[in-house]
Length: 181
Image (tube, rainbow, N blue to C red):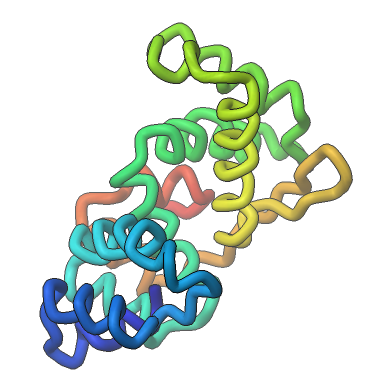
């Protein structure tokens, strides 16, 4: 994402980058055959970012870059958004030290009641969805896997990141990450 965001910052268009990525594998994906499938959500997220958010992604510290990317993922994926706001933020608010398997199960049970399409998926698909959600949270630096539990990590929110989230209308995510307005 950072590599592609850098090209966008230099003036490349999304369309040109999509073609170039397919030809040159700019994201260095292991399997060229699945490059388009893997790249599609990356381009969708980058398209949703303001130029200032792209600048944070490309040139800020790793914690800020991860946070701005997570916010963009949350803006384009309801499951990530709701988990971040309803589970992670709640855990931060009560100063919990970890997210346990039952927290994840409880969250997904609420999703199943709201989304019959997800409820009706196979158990394997639902398990994969849970795994991917926690992988996103882990890669964003918000949790660290410790066996079957996840240690909660409060990110260090810089003033620049906080100001940008507010400017982009994303103050709810700033609060969810434990920052203040």
